[in-house]
Image (cartoon, rainbow, N blue to C red):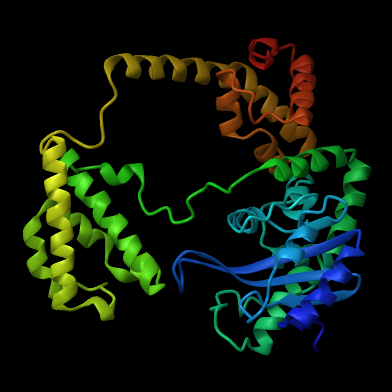
Length: 388
């Protein structure tokens, strides 16, 4: 049974936005493609549940302008109920939209001692509702969308408000609603606007390459990105990354071009081979002119001073974790649950606190840590002191 309204014209979108503006809370989810079928991070579909109506907005439809819709998403007077919102948030930010007043059900569930779960598993557990995953891996660029895709997309928002109501009641009974609210307000202050969503190069890619070789490899990958954007294809479909690495190490690999798998069919020709070789030669000359070493490793070993400093920090960190934070962690787990403790006080936070880094310490976590430190007779003050 159809339980959604498809929004693909600007006139219907205007009506949809007017409905949304009148709500105090809406549920929202996005379908997107991140370098799977096309180049980059792309919005493909928006699902909204508001006031017993479910809208499926097609951002790819001709004439659709989301500017007024974004003002609703940024309106702090309207709560946005979401599930595991991280990637959706990054996409919104990349589009210049900064959602405010979110309630992430996945966060609430973790703080209520639920194990990490997909939305389908969470809905099954809380509401005894089965959600099909058949359309999960769909190509959301394809039009027209099938009835199955629409139903799948709609169900991603239909039950969120009901799930939120259950979780809020549970949180109030446990006295932890403020924890959930604090975590969600942190989301409002995040910014991923300057994050590179096409992260094609990692530090570990330097391993085994000289300075000279890595300069060429990096340049070839940047060149691949340019070609990928031009053809609107994921970069991995343009030309195999490993082949570009081999070429940066051994120039004679250019003669294997015709035999290499993983080259986009439109580019598997002599013209592109010559273009690639010219790019290689240009990069090699720049590396030479810059004076980059052909023998020094691109991945630098730590100096003795830095190594000793890190060794000292590791010792301080490990001792603090063993004597102070692990006992507190065990007490939190005992009182609030094993799934809660990994969210509240995981290894990363313990490492940071051991070295006096309070940047990720929420206020409710500070209160908990201080309380259980007191019960254990541990002096936590040196680790929680604000630096002048």
